[in-house]
Length: 194
View (cartoon, rainbow, N blue to C red):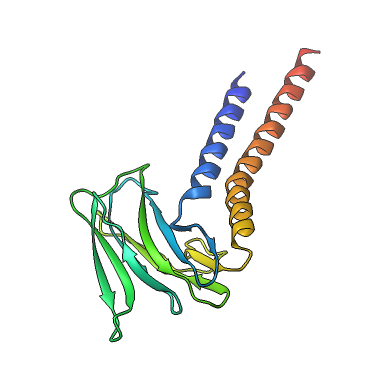
């Protein structure tokens, strides 16, 4: 009985770890868009620790033109522009406490996509009220990856496939591990009863 209890705790811990890590990073939604189009992107920022997010900075990649930022109830925004008037960085600062543990915010922006296909990396910086700043500026396989937008003529198909694929991969992994651990526990219990 004691082993089954420990096994159940291990399964629950695995489920929590995998489900939290599957979504705990800054993303751009949609992650795929068509060349030359105007697109509304949501910068999704989750809180991944026991502190409030009070500031988010987003660097605009070269070749992409941000044309507007939607106002937010919980955050004010400030635009940094180059000499030609192009937005190069957006900084959102909390009006009050920001967003807390287990919360997230979508920060809508309007973007004029470039005419050429390509991948565009948005460096993001998330500051917490405890003073820590998480730098989301790594490569795709890094622990803290940058949000990436793929501009492609196959945008509609790619976006649907990526979104559903990314959401379900972690769930499949957790489900398979849970099933294997449950079968091991059942097998061991049935052998003891003989």
